[in-house]
Length: 67
Image 1 (cartoon, one colour):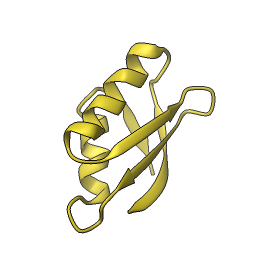
Image 2 (tube, rainbow, N blue to C red):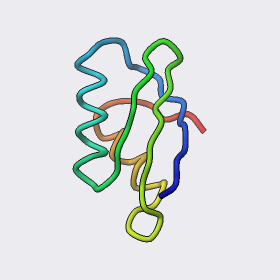
Image 3 (cartoon, helix red, strand yellow):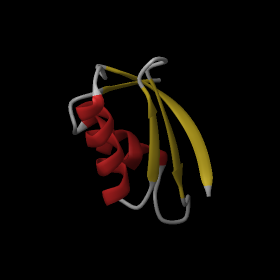
């Protein structure tokens, strides 16, 4: 399992947390959102999922993944 922290803009509330965590879970990963630091720590199996797929799942929820 690989763990990466992403900077994500546009998060402000518990709904944001739930949306992102659910979206990442649906594609086979897990996510922990840190609203205070605008960060999302994701954990995923590199053999089944790419970082780009994780970023896309977050962006499809309406958030901007920086970097």
